[in-house]
Image 1 (cartoon, helix red, strand yellow):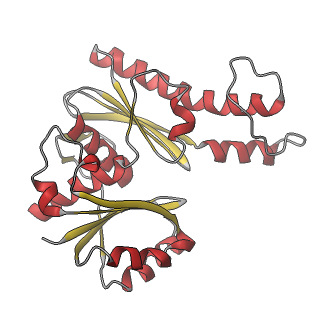
Image 2 (cartoon, one colour):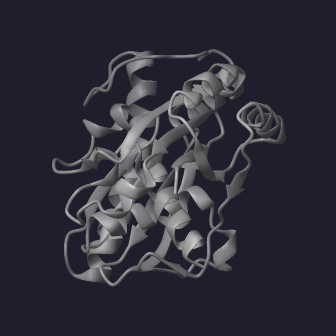
Image 3 (spheres, helix red, strand yellow):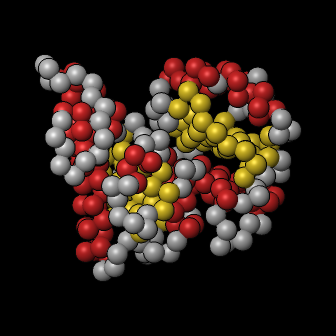
Length: 261
C-alpha cells in the first residue's frame, strides 16, 4: 500500500501524520510508531489554515488512503473536505467499537465513546501491558482508565484550561481574563487563577490514578497528550509519559484493523 494519511480532527485544530504503511507493518513491537522511520511527517493546523496543507501532503507522493477520528464542528469538517478534495482523497472516519487492538470497551454503549479517546486507548495498549491513565489535554480534558487486562473501565471529561479560564472571565464581574504562573501558595489573582485551573485538572488525574490503583492493585502509568500537555506535566508525578501523537498512533492501529476486515 502507498502512504497513509492519518487525521485527528479536534475541536480547535487538525492534527495529522503521513505514515509509510509498509514500514509501519514491520516496525518492531518495542519501537513506538511515532518514533519510527515509518512516521514520515506530522503536524497540526487551525482549520482556517488547511489550504496550506495540501501542497505539503503532495510532497509525499501518492497517498493510498486516509483515516481519521473526528470531534470537530460541521464548519471545520467542510474546510477539511475542501482541502482533501484538492489531493483527490476521501477520509474514512473511524469510530469506537466494543473490541480492538487488545482493548475491551466497557463504555455504555461502546459506540458513544469519542473516537479520539478510543484511538488513544489503543495506542497506549500498543505501548504497554500495564494499567494506565490516559490523559488528553485539549479544548476539553479526558482522563481514561485502562486496566492491565485491556479493559477500558471508564473516564472523566472536564473543561480544558482555556475553557475554564474563559468561564471565570465571563461569569465573574471583576476577574477578567487572567494568565499567571503555577504556585504552591498563590498570592495574586493571576497566579491564583492559573494554579486553580491546573489544580482542578491534575486533581482529576490524581483521582483517576488512585481509583485505578485501588482497582488493579498496582500503580498505573500516566500517558499524557494534547495541546495543553506541557502546561500540566510539571504538576503531575514524575515518570509520566508524554506522547504528542498518541491519538494519531491509535488512528493507525484502528485503520490497520479496518483494512484487515
